[in-house]
Every structure is written in structure tokens, then in C-alpha cells.
Amino acid sequence: MIMNPPNNPTRTEEIPTIEKLPTIAELQAKFAQLQADPEFRKKPFWQRIAEIGALVPQSEWRKHLPTDFARNFEHYMYGAPREDEEE
Image (cartoon, rainbow, N blue to C red):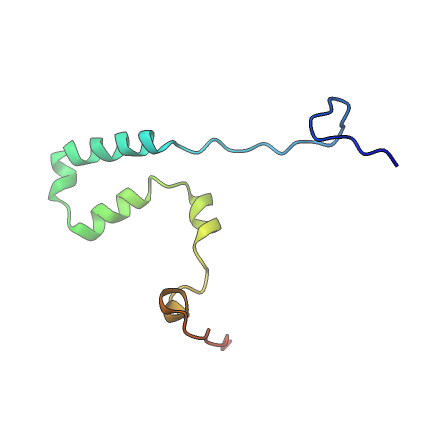
């Protein structure tokens, strides 16, 4: 059996499309805009953090945060054993 190398133009499988994520420079520029906005600076700290978090695409939040974070906080922070699911 002959295997096609990865860079062989005769390969026929479909290459998945990768969503372009914002660069760090783009995120920093958006954050600088928020910091310069006097209305943003008047808001409570928690609301400002929520707005900054909104700059991160939802797909990244879903990919990198566990769904059981509150239940197993000690596991993720300190390495304690996970709590069993109680549903």
C-alpha cells in the first residue's frame, strides 16, 4: 500500500476550515478602546470583566473551560479528587 505524504497535491480528503481567531494585538487594541471609554470606566469591576470576556469567541470558552467547573473547582485549582456527578 502506498501512502500519500501530507503535502502531496493528489490527496483528496477535505481539509477542515479553521476559523480565524483574533491576534493578541487585535485583542489588546480592543481592550485599549474599552479603557479609553469613560462609560466603560464608570461601570462596576464585574461588568467590565464580563465585557472583556466577551471579546473572546464563544467557541474558545466552550473549548477551554470545563462544564463542571463550579462543582469541581477544588479539583481544577488544587488537584483534589473530583466530586461524583449527583444527578
